[in-house]
Figure 1 (tube, rainbow, N blue to C red):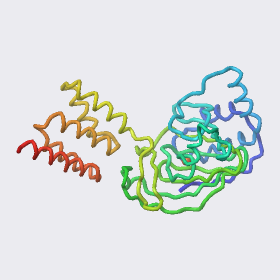
Figure 2 (spheres, rainbow, N blue to C red):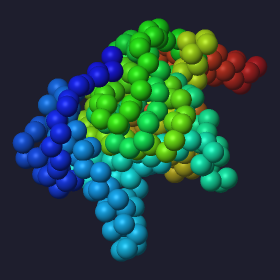
Figure 3 (tube, protein in one colour):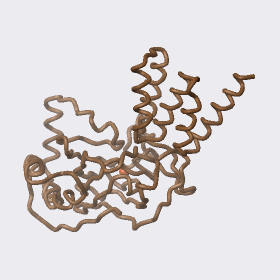
Length: 300
Ligand SMILES: [Fe+2]
């Protein structure tokens, strides 16, 4: 469940103070470390000048913005990053302030769409009235994360991330749907890099309780590699795909790997069909039926 934190600390620090302390005074690996460093983020949140200076320095030097936030859909700036955590500022625009080229974001993952996050993070309302977030939770251990899968979502209290309000979103288990902010707002985040679950970020249909899609699935990437691998066959390619099929955390990637092997080596198809069926997802069962039909057709 998302954790709401209360901290009335009125001291103020700068970004370097925060990042130096996070690096040297904390072990940033779980939600407990986010709870412990919350007073520091509150102090940075009290500094209403640092972000303006940061943005001005980027404009002045023309330094390109790091692209490591590719998986974070809201307009954001990465302020600092290590192997263990990152600090970022996230900008929340009311739809009337979206440039025409980004109007699609009014109904994108950032807003009005129920989604979880791949990483746990601590957030604080830094500027403006903030957004209202409607929270749900589920047990990620019992969920594979494939499209069409039903998930038991439990409704939790809605929260408003106003200035100074702090909350921790827990990896995978917290689902939320954001309302548009009434005015431009900013939140500051400390996000963990370490993960407990290997689930991709997921979108949910609250009406049906089903997973709509995985935002950050690695399936498209591996499907492309499978298509290339078909043209470059070798024994080492087969063993590499077999290893992927046995070990990748995403069922859809394992399914693609077993299917690739079944297509490449029809003499072993029974073994591959058993492995496909063992994945247990509706799509994997449908692939098994399709491959069985193809095999029957070939024998006629
Ligand atoms: Fe979100």
